[in-house]
Every structure is written in C-alpha cells, then in structure tokens.
Amino acid sequence: AGHTHHTHEFMFCLKGSIQQLTNKKWQSQKMGELYIFPAGTLHNSHSLEGESSGNVVINVESSFFNPYDEDYLSILDEVLGKAHQNPLMTLSRKGSMAIKRSMLEFHEEKKRKKSCYRLALRNEMQNILITILRDSEKSSIQKTLLPSSNELLDEVITFLKLNYNEKISIESVL
Image (cartoon, rainbow, N blue to C red; front, side):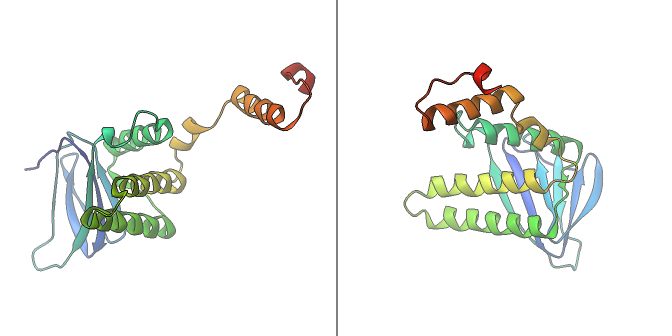
C-alpha cells in the first residue's frame, strides 16, 4: 500500500538504500539519489529488513514561492512534470552533493528559526531547483526558460538606453 501528501515531497537518500513504491512498482533508491513525489502521488518508502538507511525529506507546497517567483514556479512545474513520469531525478555526483547540502541546510534553518529563516528556506529550495535544472540530463526544463530573440533584443536596447545618451531603436541597431 502507499500514501499521498497535499505537498510535494523531495526525498534524498543519505546512506544505504531505500525501497520506493512508485508507479505501482518497487525501486531501490541508492545513496545520493533524489526522488520527488508531486502532491497527490501514491508512494511508499521503507528500508529492507536488517539494513541501515537514512534520508532527508522536504515537503513543500507550490505556494511556498510567491507569485512573482515566475522562474522558480516554472522550474518547479517542469520538475514536477518530469517526476510524474519518473520520480528519480538523474544527477551527477556534483549535483547530488549540492542537493544534499541544500536539503540538510533547509532542515537546519527550519530547526534554528533564526531571523529571516523563511527567506533562507526559500533560498535553499531555490538552490535545489536550480541544481536540478542545471544538472538534469537532456533536460527540457532549460529550454523553457531560454529568452526569445525579441526578449534578448529588448534587453540589449534597455542596456543601451541606460548606458548611452543618444536615442536608440531596434532599427538603428540592426
């Protein structure tokens, strides 16, 4: 059997291996691997009898980010879409270490609750999403965030307007 959450669950294996029930089949999550279960996804996790394992888990809602965090919400949507197909996120060793560091820091911030801790939590979650974005193999995520040619031209024109006194238009640049 399994369970669901109303939040998105990010589960990183710190040691040993963990059995994950996903898409009605059991898979072995190894040390350094990240599984993501989107809200409402049926899943279950357990260690094999006699084996030692450990993990760190973060549960977040999409509303964790404010509506102005468009890029992060876009990355989150893409990551969750990928996780619906396969909850195992393929990461390099470097990516895995970065995810581990951010997830552990997230938990430390949540425990300490020092000033601005909510901003620190958001910052760590943003680091996790950026790492997944940059590290995922054959990622379709990156393609959705690339600016269009017109957006690039607008950025150039804005830069030129801010740094030069003469009147500038697209036609004069081309």
